[in-house]
Length: 207
Image (cartoon, helix red, strand yellow):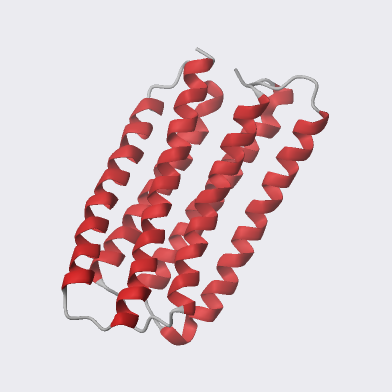
């Protein structure tokens, strides 16, 4: 499927997915080694990753405007490029909510979710790498299933965490802060699943 003149798109997908992994690793590291005094620095580092990812989207869009022939449908290229970027935006969103709601300590279920988000991005990255040679790939479908499984596991953690948050003895500000953090962690997993489903759809169209 991937010819020399098509490599730009697949390389762009891979680079963006790699940045998603980098962002998820940064988030997980920040949360597991949590220090409120260092959050502002982490936010700045995360934003640099997000900006780098945005540049990839812009380059892909520019290429699509002038391209005569594309390896897969233009709409699918744009959708996949944008959906990987959304993963990074959501990851950055978690850190933003930790920062501007002034979270002072981590909760175990949030740490569990961040670890799963990191694993989901790794699987997503591996999945994207398989796209150029999807007809010969022996692991593409397995990566899709794994991402979907991780998203389901995050759903379970999210539901339990939100239930505890709203039935436990917590002050209103804590509830508001953590509701946002949990929700954006769940968004991260959902976004990874959307990427996996998009790749699967592309494969089905081109098989």
